[in-house]
Structure formats: structure tokens, C-alpha cells
Amino acid sequence: MIRKSRATRSGKRAPRVSVVIPTYGRPDLVQAAVESVWTQKLPRGLVFEIIVVDDGGTDGTGEAVNRLARKLRAGERLRYLWIPHSGPAAARNAGAKSAKGEVLAFFDSDTLAQEGWLSAGIDRLEKEPEVFFVEGRVEPLYQREASPFAEAVENLGGGRWLTCNLFVRRNEFLRLGGFDERFKRPVREDSEFAFRALEAGKRCAFVPEARVLHPVREGNPARLIGHCREGLYEALIQKGHPRSYREKFKWWDGRQVPVYYFAHYAALFLLVFRPMLALGTLALGCAGLISVWCRKRSWNAGHLAKLLLPSLVIPFLRVFYVVRGYLAFPESPEP
Image (cartoon, rainbow, N blue to C red; front, side, top):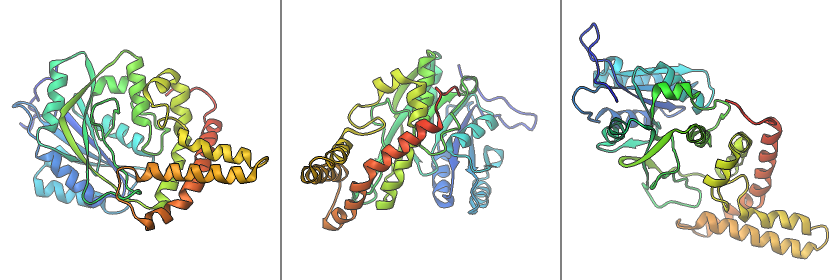
């Protein structure tokens, strides 16, 4: 049960809920995120705080957050914490350790909380003490037609455990070890934590009423290619949780190497024996990969031309980083 906030010696109520927002290089976006949280209403007797954790930024985020705190007259209910650049997992852990609340509400610095978000997540934990963590609904916010380079984040039915909308009981979170800080990029660290919690017998609930909007990020070919580096961390989650990895991630595109990359690998093999067939197989693989990127997106001939190079190199770069990750993390991880 989540207790009511107690009055401190100064007469102010101590927070029972801590909203942790890691950020890096987003001084403008984080202000909008904080303001969307600040307007949230909780049942009478419950107070929340907001902790913005700057992951080594030098772009004026601290000054922006402090100005916002003065504008909102937030006092100690809006705090800024700076840590050396270590990745979002470490930033969230730092916020959790600094938090005063019994419940942690993890949020992103480019996410917008909708009305009733905080109370819906807290209410589920209040009513069901056996629930350890709660997923909220994440809806993509399309500000314009999305191109094939855009990145949409969503969790419409649960089973994604996205850290832009996740509620966790703080003491148990810390006992479980928090997020694995070896994940230096915002990828898989949420799933690894969820696997660890579920395998420890912890219960998770999905609360669609706890809604946030996640703006769709536009990108470019370099961004698509840069995502290949996320393959470094596949070993951490696959070796640590082999069964959950097989059962929770979709076989056709959720694991180390999507099946629609296989035509590229077949082409590399055929190149030795049947060069013309290899070229045809490679062309088929590129067409399939481009069709995946363009599906449900607005595209034109210019997009297709820009997608040609990524479609050629990404399957091979992905394998390179996956193998590199297995060499970097040779043992089954124990966070």
C-alpha cells in the first residue's frame, strides 16, 4: 500500500511518488516533458516530485530546468541531477537512488504525459499490492507524415515495458539491482530489467489509462545505419535470459538478426558459386528491406534512392556488431 505523504519539519509534505526523467542534449524538449508531468493530479494526501537526471550534458539543460523550477515555484519538488555521461540506464538508476518516493515513475525527456497518467499508474499499484511494476500506454505522436526514416515508439497493449512509461516500487527495484548499466544506449535495458523481474516472480500489469504521447522522431540514412550498433547489447539479454528472449521477442524481427536480412547472407554465400544469382538475391533482399521501412509510411522516389545504401550495408553491419557484442560479453551476465 502506498502511504499518504507525511509532513516534514518545514510543514511541507514529503513526496511518495518520484518521477525520474533522464535526459541528454534536450534542454527544450525536457521542459515540455516536465510541464506535462507538473500538471498531473494525485489523490489528496499524495505528493510527487520530479527528478531530471542529466546524463553528462553540457548544453544548458541544468539552467533550463532551474529556470522552470522557479517559474513553477516547484521548490524541492523539481530537482536537477547531473552525472558523468554513462547512458540512460545509469541515469535512471541515479534518479532512483536519489528519489524520496515509494514509487518510481520512469518517464522520457521527449514524452508528454496525458491527463490522469500519474494517478492511473499509482492507483493500480495501490489497489493491487502484489503488482511490482506497471506499464502504461505509449502512443506515437505524429506531427507530420512519417517518412521511412522516422522512428515511432509505441506500447498499445503491453508486453513492451518501455521506460518512457513505467511505474515500479522503489525498494524492490533497488533490491533487484535496477537497470543493467552495461547498456550504454537506450535499447533492451528495459526488456532486460523486465525479464529479470518476471523471472524472479514479480507481477506486471498494463494500465491503458496511464497514457503518454511519444513524438515520432524524423531521421536520415545515417540514423538507420547507426542503429546497427544496438546489436552490441543483444548478448547481454540473450545470454542472461535465453528462455524469455525466445518467448517474448518475435522470431521474425525481434531478435538479433531479422529474417528479412537472410537474403543478404545467402547472396554472400552464392557469390562464390553463382555470381549472377547472388546479385539477384541481394537485389531481392534490398527490395524486401526497403519495403519494410516504407510500410505504413509516406515515401517518394527520393526516399527510395536514399534507402539504397542502408539496405545494402545494414544487414552486414548488424551481424558485425552482434558478433562483437558476444565477444565483449562472453559470459552469461549477472547484473
